[in-house]
Length: 91
Image 1 (cartoon, helix red, strand yellow):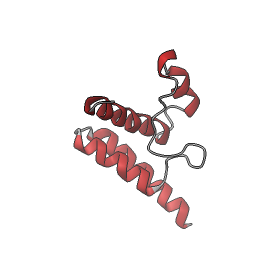
Image 2 (spheres, rainbow, N blue to C red):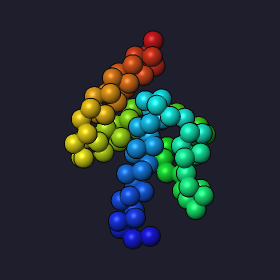
Image 3 (cartoon, rainbow, N blue to C red):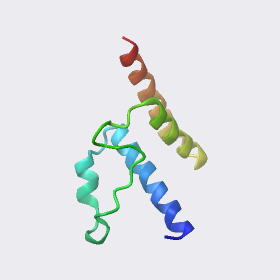
């Protein structure tokens, strides 16, 4: 894997995380969208077996990614979700 492939895989992981965190897609949706030759590539920045990606550290990582590529609408949506999740944990 070269540098550009690594960047592409990282971007895909952040896109997948955004879709799951915002509940626009499920893990199954993402899996079934994979092409036959890429079924082994299931990039996510968290383990979907043990968490749903709605932790502060994962959301912060995804926000930083979208800030770096100037997709501020996604950042705003993630910040709102982070606030809701944080309130739920403290109650």
